[in-house]
Every structure is written in structure tokens, then in C-alpha cells.
Amino acid sequence: MIGSDTDSTRASTITLILAFLVASILFMTDRGSDRLLQRTQIGAESTMSPGLAILSKPLRGAENLIAEFKDRSRALEENKALKEELYRLREDKQRSQIMAKKLERFEAILAADPGIDIPEKKIAARAVSEVEGPFVRAALINAGRNKGVQKGHPVMTVDGLYGHVLRAGPRASRVLLLGDLNSHVSVMSLRSDARAILSGDNSEQPRLDFVDDRADWKDGDTVVTSGDDGILPRGLPVGTVKETGERKFIVGLNTRDKNVDWVWVYPYVPTQAPDETEAENETAAEDANVVADADNAASAPDSAEAAPVGANTEAGLR
Amino acid sequence: MARSASQSFADGGEWKGILLMILLVFISVLNVNIAGRTIGFIFLPLIGVCLWPRTDKVIISIIAIFIFGLLLDLLSAGPLGLWALIFLTVFAISRPHMRLKPHNFSSAFIQWVIFLIFAIIASYLLGWFAMENRPDAPALLFQALAAAILFPLVYGLRHIGRYMLSDADARGL
Image (cartoon, rainbow over all chains, first blue to last red; front, top):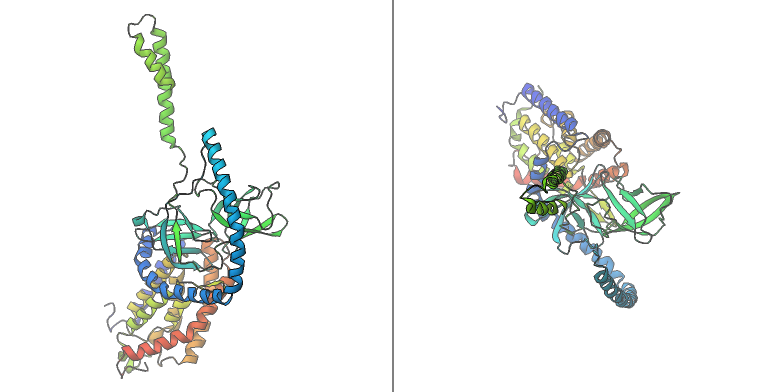
């Protein structure tokens, strides 16, 4: 009997072999594909997240305390630097307010879409566990579908983009960090609008891929999301470019070396591609209308029902 | 079979192992940022397997270790089955139920270092195979170092736990 004092060597050997077999099968089937037990994983993450949140509190508290000590030790010089920055920012603020007014007026004249698609609503969450291991760079946050988090939503910290939601469970979500091997985000230079793909490689600093020969990337450029992928909104701050070789760039992430405790999720609804079947149905309906209109038009002179045909034609063309 | 008569004192020892593993698995997925570097403790639960109590309920122990391996895979978002395989291999080699004497610190530490080296190599190769990309070796070594530094603490915790959860006769087992 399992667990009894009579666990024989043979029974335990068989159990061990069976356990090995099951683990090997799981390992082989999970390789290079979507997670086999995705539902189990979401369940496990949701169940464990409250416990992890409790355990992470003292750790995050200790981290913040150390950070606070460091800040205090250089409070005076930081205060001086902040004052200088404040004076500079006041001037910038005034300028930006004038620019915003101008822009508003131009948009009103042109009736243009301003294109700022960063949602104003934010979902606050705690990063209860962060895995920056050799295989994955991911985090677990304690907000899930119960708070409106969905797969693909961008996750931010106060410093910038942290990652995006990979799986949303009922009460917790798994976030794929920018440095993860599977993370590929469409980005651009704030200075030159040059485009590239920010590809994670499980290192501290992801690289810029697909850099066009003519693209104007320079050391120190600020990197933001371009929104070209239609998944993340445009303009989310990512980091700063570092040139490592000829046309080779890596990005120092804004969130790197920071204690990540609170994050927020943007419930961003990406640009939806038209449904293919819907589009096909619409085209078919339009074609049918055109054919019907043509038939009606041909029979119109000798038909008493000429009036509705005109209406149909209008509807078909509309 | 080399099982001593005093083996029956170890009854229920697997629960101490399970409690320790729950704690270690939870801590292993909590990263700490120290001096601007994020340090993880993914190898920490391996200490729990190395220090698994000498119990005669081997089947429960195997099932528990297998489940903890899978749990660690799920929580660390790594390849499913990787840690289960490593834990089971370590358990199969160390065979705590066949141990005649309790570990002292030095023997436990030496055994732990050997299993840690094995786990580093195994996780690197299996991770490479599963992810079809080389794992980050420095991150792997850093995590191993972090777990090695914490070994005395976990050993001490287990020692205290043994005194708190065992009766006087069972101590030292």
C-alpha cells in the first residue's frame, strides 16, 4: 500500500521509474510547442499568487529599505540636481502647453485622428514573483481576468515598459519580460523615428534586430514602442540605445536594475484585423447586390416596380 | 537490505521534507534585487531534495518530489518536467531511505555541491534542448552561487525543524 511501512524496494523502484517516465513524457511533449498543461499552469499560478504576494512583501520591503538608505546617503546632491531639473522642466512644461494648444487647433482644423492610443485607464498590480533565470524572464502579477487583464496587454512600471501579458488567469497573470528569448517588440527611435525589432535573448540587455542600413540609430537614442505591430500602443518608453559594433545595437532597459514592486497594466485594445469570413461575406453580398442591380436596371424600362430599384442601387453602392 | 531497526523512528519524516520543500519552492521563485542585480534562487529546492529525511515511506517521497519538481517548472515558467527529472535523479542517487546515519554539515554540504554541479549541467543541457537556445550560463551560475550561500541557513532551518517536529527519541535521525 502506498505510504505504508511496507513500501517494498520493488514498489518504490517501479514508482521511481514511472515518475521518471511521466516527467520525460511531459518534458518531450512540452518542447518547442505551446504548454501542454496551460490550464494547469494558469491554475497553479492563480492559486500560488496570494502566497507569493505574502512572501514577497518582506523581500520587497527590505529592497525598498536598502534603496531608501542609498537615496538618503546622497540626498543633498540629489536635491540640488532635482532643483536644477525642476527649473528646466518648468520651462519645458510651459513650452509643451503652448505646443499642445497649437496641436489641438491643427487637429481641429484637419479633423485628424491624434493617434495617441495609450489608454488612460490603468490596472494596478503587484509583481509577486519575478523569474530572471537562464531559461525565461517572466513575472507573475496578482491581477488577472477578474480585474480586466487580458493576453497581450502591456505592463508598465514607473520607469517604462516591463513586458506584456503572456497568460491571464482568473486572479493572476504571467508577464513576459522584454529580455526574454521569446519577446519581440516593434520599437522606434524617439529622435529619428527609425524602426527596429527589440528582441530578447535572455540577457540583461536585449538587442535591436532588423535594423535597416539607412535607419538612423545612434548611441543614446531613446527607444519607445512604435505600435507597428498593432499589439502594443505607440510611445511607451522602453530604454536607451547602446552601440556595440558596426550597426549592432543593444538597449539598456529603463526597468533594468530597479526594484519592481508595483506595476500597472494598460487595457489596450489592439488594432483588429478584419475578420476574413466576415469580409468575404460582405464582398459576396456586395457582388450579389451589384448583379441584382444590373438585372433590375436592365428590366427597369418595362417594369412597374422601377422606383424601388433606384433605392436598391443606392443601397448597393453605398 | 541495509535498513536499520531504528528506521521506524523516521516514520512521518516525509512531512518535514514536504514542509521544507513548500517553503523552498516558494522562495525560489521570488527574486531579490541586490546592488542593482536581480538574484534568483532556482536551485534552492534542490537543497530540500538533498536533505530529504530518512523515511521508509519511499513512494510518498517519490510522488512528493515529482510534484514539487512540476510545481517549480510551472511557477518558474521553465520547460515542464525539467526540474521533476533533476529532482528524481538526485533522489534516486542520494537514496535517503537507505542512509544509515544522519547527515552532518560537512557530508551534507559535499553531497549538495556534487548534486548542484550535476543540476547545473543537467539544467543547462536540458534547457538548451527544450528551448532550442543556449540558456544564460552566467545567470545559471549566479543562481547556483546564491543557493550555495544559503545552504547553511537551510541546513540550520532543517535542524531546528527536526528538533521542533520530532520527539526526543527520533532526534539525530
